[in-house]
Length: 240
Image (cartoon, rainbow, N blue to C red):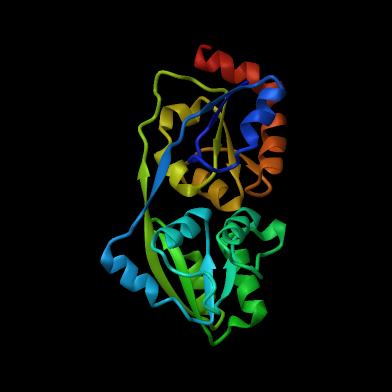
């Protein structure tokens, strides 16, 4: 198969080599890029989260943007990450004792449930997030009795699609990538969404997709490998 990996650089780094080892052609064609916001207004707003009882990082981009602002990870706040990849980014930045939901619940809803269950009801919870963040994490925390304080620390911009190339399968790792995917390509390719939130965004656009169980290399590899018997159909439709 010819497979497009649309996530930004530095993510799922072991996936492309693993797919190539299986004989697939892999093209890294990001649909989005993240841009940390490092202006004075953002730094002042983000600094207000330092020292709150809790702080949540819904993505690795949030961790990277927090680092770009020069803000501490060891201020005494309890830190929570949406999944193992984000937790690993926090650990690499010097954080320890990071709370994560169970692997099967690596979503905004799962993160909110884990934080509430760990004692955040009635507590202030800083949300380090991007400009396109969906409201689910903030809403679920507030409905559960926490006091969320969201701050936007990075932007998400679309990257022009390589319209001259056709693909049998397209891997989508975020709702922002789904929003940037051209309609004609989506309707002529097998779409694989990493996790339920991205899959829901695909369905919201009227497309069907195969859903990986979680946003990990192993889950993505499993979902894409299952498409191999169907690749000839996609290839004929794309004229490749």
